[in-house]
Length: 200
Image 1 (cartoon, one colour):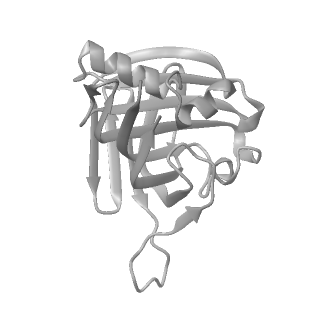
Image 2 (cartoon, one colour):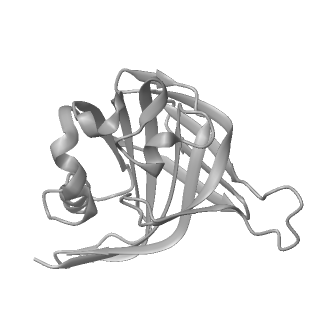
């Protein structure tokens, strides 16, 4: 069945700014492993005729230093406000079962750490983006505006292979606490993207 989502996104990982993994999954992370939280908000969309607008999903991953080696450990949070049907549809999209960008990453996952329903509070305020997921995740990032910039526009990384698309805004974590699915880390590097679409 066809589906389409209009999304906004941000992430924060344990690498130093700028994360080598985002430039290419074949480049090694800053540290021995890469730990990352990917936060997606569905601004508008439906899956198999089910409206999922306004809901959020977050993936927490622990990967080897070189992400393209596979054997990722991955857990998924789905918005507690989603109905059982909405949660099922979102789980299918974000697992890659219904195709789309997450299907390209699915072969890299070696261990599925499960799916949890949790309250996900996402906020966006200018250059700042934040999320709270129960007691497990408390992240805030800020898009990086280069020193001396007259436009005030943040730095972009373009031409990357990433589920949020080839153009990402460079950011850094200003607040970070992640302890979920047995994965614990402090975020440093970060990226965001305000608007993009998935469909299959």
